[in-house]
Length: 501
Image 1 (cartoon, rainbow, N blue to C red):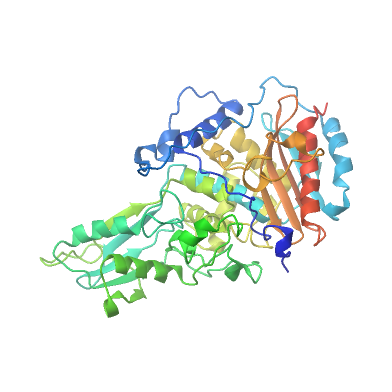
Image 2: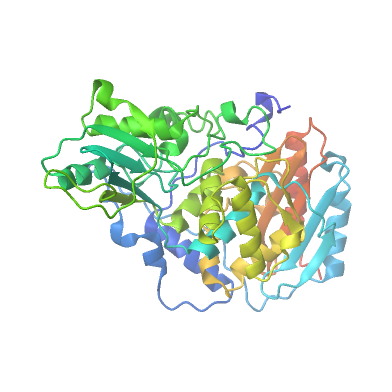
């Protein structure tokens, strides 16, 4: 059962009242660098960040489009010499708030110091709890570690078994666009791939299109997903080949993003839809434009004088780098990107690129990072599944690891985190006297399913100390969406306004 529409954004899809403007490449680089500097890692020049972001491939600004000014800083930097809160001080600040009835009968909490990693408070901190979209923090850390911030996902076209046949091979890029009107900014495009294919074919006319989406095996919908996820606009059939996150009308989805809290109708067979668009761009019509599923032939056959040999690569386009895909995933709580990122983790660790394989690979990577893999049990990478369990202490460990400077590649998780009273799912929150102390100093990922509410991220105390927190409740009253969120905001605001010593 889902909350009524009047209660706000549908559970499983946290959305702000207005969409955050996309960060320009230079600004996103600054966010990542500030995260590293704030965590104590000395950064004297951008180093690899510009390369991770693909700054060398930045799309020129459209003619006539006004330049967007760089935003002013919202978060003040932490004070490296700020006093650390004491466990007793944190306990005194939080425990009265944890008894709020709107939080329900089970509230699990972890608070830790980012610099030292020291636990400052735990209530059920090691208990597996349904995390909802907070799962995306684990997915982000895993894919950044497994693939690296600069990795790009290819979509290829190869010569088929018959002359003129083109096989479109999905590599798992959920942001692939048909043309310049796609949903995701600066995405790879099929029309660019078509130009390469036509040039590679030379005098051979295209005769048909086969789509190869075999990279992602298994079910296309996740275990533990609510029954309305496939049709509710916030999930989709997960395929290795899709355009615009499987949205049926990407232009309408952009136009109605705020009004629909980011929801949009999705197509049930994304690979075939992408293949048909590709065939149209190749100029195929009638029976020749019919698309079938198949697998790309292996390269190695001898070419003929008339056509490229079967399996010959005819063209390739590449996705945005992972650092930017993670930013999109966190900022918009994009469930489809999250599932694609989990499968990238699977591919990197020689697991099947499926729901099961993604979960297994994320366990592997979390263990490689020295964290407790026995405190996470996943059925998907997005948090739509009610079968997911993550402990609050693992979440604070992940955030501390990303922020303490020992793994600079992981700091990209912070670029898309909503800021209290300013952006994303926190844009309309922290605006009443009981929570205003958190405005601008709480930066966190939220998660919501029916009776499940979660928030995890960073907060700077009044003394300038950077803390990480995770508060998860999975037994909240079903009719208390707004009240439960305000109770969570009061908890994180208490950390912001107290020195807790």
